[in-house]
Amino acid sequence: MTNLAKSLLFSTALLAASASAMEQNAFDKAFDALPKSDSSAQLKALQDLRYRWIMESFPENATYEGYRGQDNRWTDTSMDGIERRREQTRSLLAASRHLDRNSLPEEKQLDYQLLYQDLLMEVKGFQFPGHLLPVSHMDGIQRNVPSVLNSMAKGTVADYETILTRLEKLPALVQQTQALMREGLEKKITPPQITLRDLPGQIRALVPEEPKDSPLLKAFNEMPAGISSAQQRRLQQRAHALYQRDLVSAWRNMAEFVEREYIPGARVDTAFTSMPDGLRWYAHLVRENTTTTLSPEEIHRIGLAEVRRIRGQMQAVIEKTGFDGSFEEFTKFLRTDPQFYHTSKEELMRGYRDIAKRIDGELPALFGTLPRLPYGVKPIPSYSEKSQTTAYYMPGSNEAGRAGIFFANTYNLPSRPKWEMEALTVHEAMPGHHLQIALAQEQEGLHPLRRNAGYTAYVEGWGLYSESLGKDLGLYRDPYSEFGALTYDMWRAVRLVVDTGMHQLGWSREEAIEFFMNNSAKPRHDITVEIDRYLVWPGQALAYKLGQMKIKELRAKAEQRLGERFDIRAFHDQLLSSGAVPLNVLEARMSGWIEAQNAKAAGTPAKAVLAGQASAG
Image (tube, helix red, strand yellow):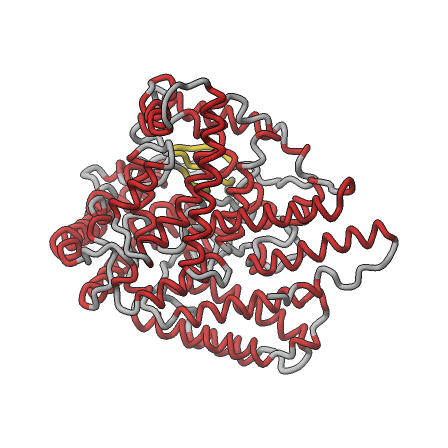
């Protein structure tokens, strides 16, 4: 899983759920300056304005991207900011509609399609009050703020002055967030009550008694040698004074509000569709996250079929181990036998780093192009580990001078089995999220909008597809790791069933947990955390399996059509060459590439097979 907005990249889901805007005067001036003729110039100007709008409206994204000049601000989450942002987005959509698409050159058709499609999806999302769900146990300012602060530049006195300026503005962000939460309470729009149990603890963990122990002031604990001792003391004293004067009270007030008002008033029903207009809202989220037109009922049936298929494969592996017992007895064995668990957090992290190192040496056999940006492996921060998923990936940035990070959860070691570690590393690091996202960031011919796109079905579909490459990378050599890989595939198939089951078909939280337990070897703690994740991120978890199935379908088509001419390295390079795209666009482009390969072999021109396919679907 990629972190922040289910990704730190700007997806339409993040934009629709957030509330901010660039200053109106600046937007109006830039909008009025858009070219009135020459469709190519119009498109480029619209892309530039859209990118600038995202960076200035969402300063946290600008920090992650290395886009300068925005690091001293937070996203404006006031209602005025929401309305201003929505009007600006509608203006951008109207401008894109008036652009003469037919006069664009073929190589620009895809740029236009993605710009228009994203704006349209965002505007459609305005009919639903996603801004009234600003915080859950999985995301929100209590999770995002420390991450943003940790990603800021820390090389000079000026950098630290910028961090202090941002910290000074933090209480206002906390107040704005609480105002949205209060309105959500009044309108019966909240996360399920059961999922909020760890939220007060997450908030209080940000403001311990000692300032130096706070994740908010981590930057001031280890300052660079280039800053003099006197300057370091001055900056630290300012940070500690600000902490004691403003930050502690702001966050502790929020924790008390959550405990005394928000949790008691939150909805007891767990189904997202129990909220006002929930059925239509859920359908919108399903379409947005999957980039398909599949209904929740269709996805549920696909999930049941996948569960049956993978269950058969799992049974075959059990027989290979020689285990004498039922499926339930085998999964209990995997969950409880000490041989499958590390005894220290340090040992667990060494295991992940060893796997990552082994994978890196095998990658050239499957990929012709590898990213330049390095990545690291770190434990999930202690203040959020208890309610966090098994792992996530934090994208890096060459512009910001930051490597990508695979964060692994070291909380509760008896729920972190060795047999899942290889599949998890493949998904989160290489050749999963790091390879795909870093390569997209390094595509010099793509506009920043394209390089940093975060279509969940593509990004997470690629991550899950990458798990199937494990054997080619020298992994899954013992039957337990092989079963672990199948458990991870089953995990994503189960998601199709339980997400739609809970939100569309009336399943209870307990029924979803039991279905998961009965079809997986994952520990109950992990399963409970996962189910609660689906409750607060409805529809997001559907994207993984549907994206993987589409990529596998395209690979099978390429292998069948190209026969002996099929080159796995060329296939992967082409699949990754345009950054993340919706599944309908991916299918059109890869189908065009397959036909181009056939035409090339036959010595006949394949006319516009890539750019011309971009408008399909």
